[in-house]
Length: 82
Image (tube, rainbow, N blue to C red):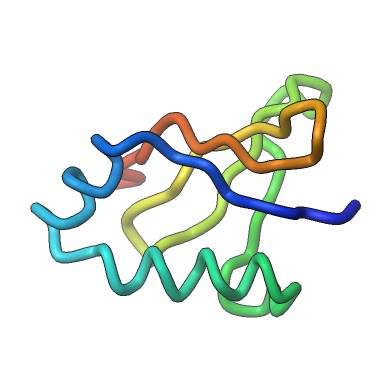
């Protein structure tokens, strides 16, 4: 698996900025692109065959994503895990 890019809509940045999560998100995003997974910790959601994944932004928030055909991550939701 070779992740080339992480793609997200503009509303995701606005959502994260309102909650003061933008810097934490960017840090997690960079660690995924550089394959430093100890901080970002991404897993597949249930059921395992769904191709829906998430990574932690912090203890409370998760970024929900899936792969496209070019192995880019498409982030489509930020989940409040509490």
